[in-house]
Image 1: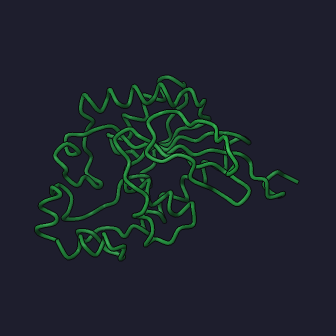
Image 2: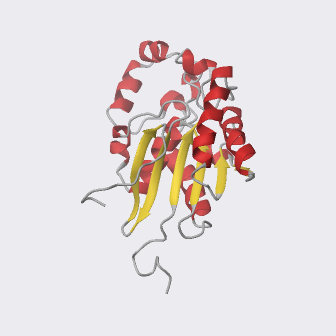
Length: 219
């Protein structure tokens, strides 16, 4: 009987790492599936973060195939020697006509749609994907690669803020209307999911430093 069969879990860990800074991030433009390069600052962020994450001794790296995520993943790969598996299912939410617009332009032109999304209603922003559809494509990829990990192993997933949030929400079993309660990730920050007896749980969110052991009565 395996450890997972006994309900103890296999002690695996998933690190969901957002890409580095882009010019559209600075301009507050909705990127979605538009393929935007990292800025020089973004490359530096990726290199710094990669040095930290490498010390977690990841067993595998998967990434969105969009350049901002792929180049971020490459920084970790260059240190660890692990190949990067790129998958279009890990791309950011496709948001139709919202893509390329600034935050202010979205609010001005699509205010009702924006407000409904913020209330947690299922909205095809700009005529694009629902958040649940993003989770439908991204979460299975993450789980499939996590299932390949050895007991106690670590998977690094390099993706985008919206896709990471929906994936975390799905893996934690949260209702979609509550996913927005997970705050956004800064560029090259990450969240950590750990495997416990009752499934995946959120250990770190929007972190930029290495996880510390939990020393207390709640673990």
